[in-house]
Amino acid sequence: MAGNKDQFPYQLNIWDGAKKDIEKLDGSQLVFVKKGLKRIKQFGLNCGSPLHGKLMGYRKLKNRKMGLRIVFGQSERGDKIEIIDIVAVGKRSEDAVYQTATMRVKNNT
Image 1 (cartoon, helix red, strand yellow):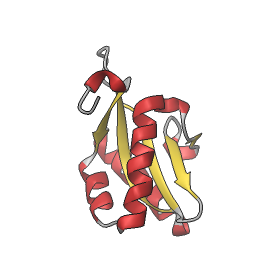
Image 2 (cartoon, one colour):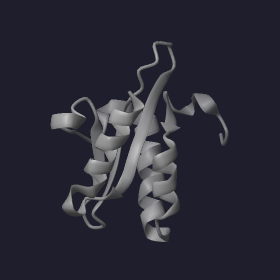
Image 3 (cartoon, one colour):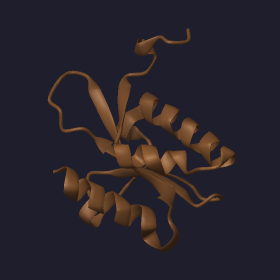
Image 4 (cartoon, one colour):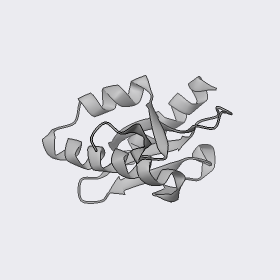
């Protein structure tokens, strides 16, 4: 059923910077991101791979062919609703997406 909020166990909180990242993508990249966000809503922190270093506690979902990454982590809210924060979306080239995510996490705490 379209519009059924109970369809997925997780809700997404897409940070403003990540929204701007998504707006810059082309059509094929948007297809990957939409599928990736749907997967995150369904599986939460059980999808993707863990990140290390300054992004420990966050995860990445990647598309190797496009070089795109979605960086996400569980929100610090203490309520019963499981919320996943989408921190950054972008290309891995020269670790740009990870540098952006690190800056956003640092500025958000």
